[in-house]
Image 1: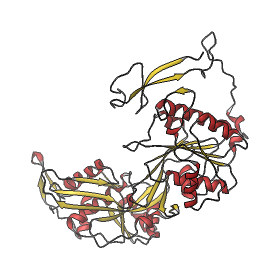
Image 2: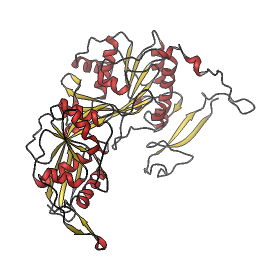
Image 3: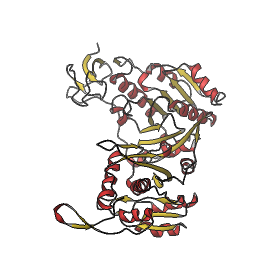
Image 4: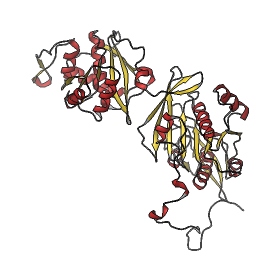
Length: 480
């Protein structure tokens, strides 16, 4: 008779306890611990000496050549998706795709399944939230009603694996979503930590033994994290996040983890009437309808993986009527903005302590690299002085706490993209001035943050003695 084990598992983080308690000590959540019963009938037998009896053999590394897993990747016929995966789906790989409700996960995956099926590969789309007829209606709205994609509406993992094993092994399997799957191996409700982990284990084992590429759709919490135990993210080969705002047309597919490719590549899509459309030139799209005559805007030349991208950074600085000025940021790190504001005040002589600061990255894009410091500082100074930055100017550079502007990697690629889009000059660190000239741009090197203030103000900074704490005099720039 199978041994049944009772444990108490946190539904937020997956921590296991021997008894119930009100608060999880691992993640701090209240009332998230639930009782779950697991069945140990599938456990491997144990020998008298305590070692598990397992049948298998060790294969030398050089002996793995020529195995079935050496087959080429399966391209999805969606260039932006193939860019993020590293060139296509690897045989036997398992991908976890997360995103907010309504962001377009199911739309992207039905398009990928249809493209691979039209290329001759067996593609199976299994939905645990919709009926097969509802999935077909979505495919017809996207103009994919004639694609030979196999549809199923099932949540029982054992039935799914039995169906997939019948006939030719599939090349691509989509499970939408993993939180709705359940297995007989454990006795717990679907969506619980135990069921999600056990269902993922069964699907991963099928992928590794048959060579099928499986995509698991995962729900996300209010914090943007993929719901369920974190151990699932460690079990799969790649974790991808589908980002964007429902009010914007742009969607960003970003690889958080990828065992078979880079984790800093992104794919850009635009939501239209025919589903998600690839954006081959995101820079031109993010800079569309830009009003260059307004102060407080700066064009930042950034990098996402190997792809250079130019985005518009917007800033608004207004006098505050409150005792504590407000700092609102969309698309950038708020702590990084606080640091740039402090450097502008301490090293550039720009007083922002009595002003509200609002900053936004146009198009719903999110910037994570520190190379955007110079563009953010330029937008802030431009808004405060009400002096627009020349529309043909692009900026990038990292600002140190000492006020120096530090060089950033991959400057030639950034500048070449700016030249291709028609920009004529670049405010860059001194180390990137030569690369700007080689790209055909007019280089305006910036060594210190005070030089940036002078460039935007249209004159050289006027040094004056300023008494700091302790009576020590230092040079600065006149207050605005």
